[in-house]
Image 1: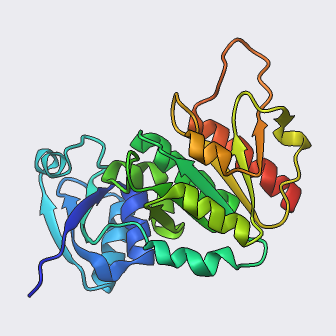
Image 2 (image 1 turned 60 degrees about the horizontal axis):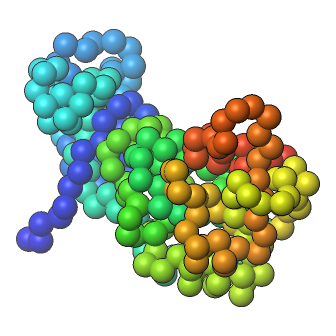
Length: 246
């Protein structure tokens, strides 16, 4: 029998989302033995209905397995936690009024998790990121995403510049965010087939990414700081698009 790579997800939102969206790939669930509250009992009922094995463990053992003290008393061993294949982009690019988020080299798992959570709330069809020099779907990402890592397609690509060209060939308007842009986001048309590109922490978008955007825009900054955290800037940008597209 072939062996499958497994990862551990922990926290209520992450485990509940995996149960809802992909129970077939949950190998087992670990529950903190000292927890007997209502939320745990409801979760155990859902796990048992799915026929998934449960192991009750001591708090310190659960934290050791997860390498975290923020498990909320529940974790799951999960099969094949990977991004979707690049080929899955083909159908998305031809979708009417498609709405995409492109993340050019996000390194902090907390930022990626927050961006995925915001993307889910904004109704984004998929989040696209490069395979190299960028964080993938780690357990921390899934915990911060609060279930969005299972609900929003996350597609890692080998050549982001080439994918941006494919988007433009499919009549998707590619808008990149850059502090030196001339146009503010609130003066920009974000309706129709759209991809919003966010740069990495500190360095922003890479040169080839920038060159393959149809338009560069910026957020108005009234204070002393020059830029916002990428997950905050992503939230503002996505929901300005949601406002216009509603």
